[in-house]
Structure formats: C-alpha cells, structure tokens
Image 1: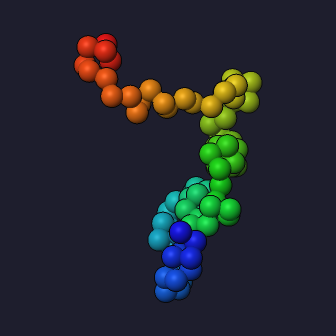
Image 2: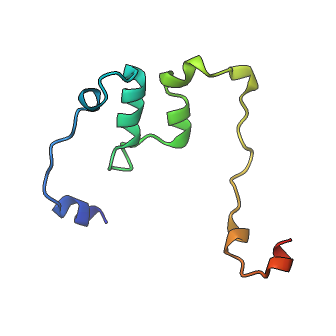
Amino acid sequence: AKSYIKSLPKIPKKDLSVLFPKANPQAVDLLDKMLQLDVEKRLTATEALAHPYFDQFRDVEEETEAQQSYDDSLEHEKLSIDEWR
C-alpha cells in the first residue's frame, strides 16, 4: 500500500485555515493532524481526544479508559434473526 501511495503524483497540501477561515484554529489543527495520509504521522484516537481543542469540553475527573479492547468478533457471526435476539 505504501508503494502505491508513493507512486501517486505529488499534490500540494491544502491549507485548511484558508479552506475554513472562520473555524477555530485549534479545530483546524486537529483536523489537519487527523487527516494525515501517513499512518505514522496521523493522530491515534487517544491522541486526538487529548488535543487542546477538546480542553473546553474535557472533565478529567469523569474520564475513564477501557480496560480491554472492543471485541467485534460477534459482528462476523452468521446468525439468524432469532439467534440475534
């Protein structure tokens, strides 16, 4: 996949602050960091939620972190409607 991406023609990056001139600068910064094509440069979900843009909404005392990863294996099961119920 990386070699395919590297084979694409280089297109200059758009300045999101120009595209969204009325947007909160922190929101533009967050969006820019979340839209990185390179997964190694892109923010993780945890990093995105820790971004300063969310400071105004954050209450650290109410935050919790999952102790285990979400198990989506059930979503791949071939079950009848009755079995799902």
